[in-house]
Length: 128
Image (cartoon, rainbow, N blue to C red; front, side, top):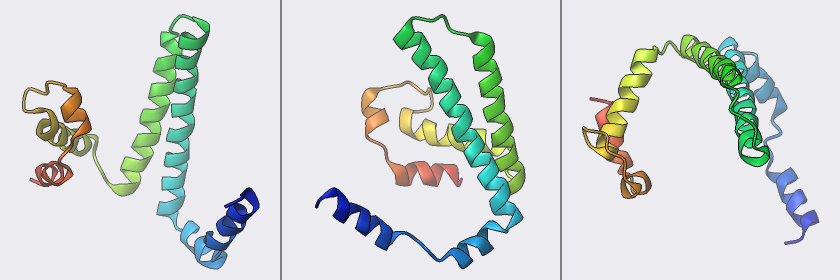
């Protein structure tokens, strides 16, 4: 496949049902989630840039900037939580249950456990 053929296949496969997309995006829930998700991505990129400057250019960690960006991420997570009526406690509890299955109750990290995951058991533990 050459680049032109690839672009033609992209154009052919793209969802162009713009009336349906417009209708879906008129939903308050979808607009709020879009705001949260784009915001999380944007702020994550800003943290990546701070880390890049440390590693690539030898700059000191700007703790204050990290705190600001992490706070912004938490704010956007809050928007998503409010939109979906999810509490921080629910997120933390389900994450703890998932990681407890993956790494054991004492949460001891291992490369093997990080790579080989039992998604079904993790999901079942989250739903207990």
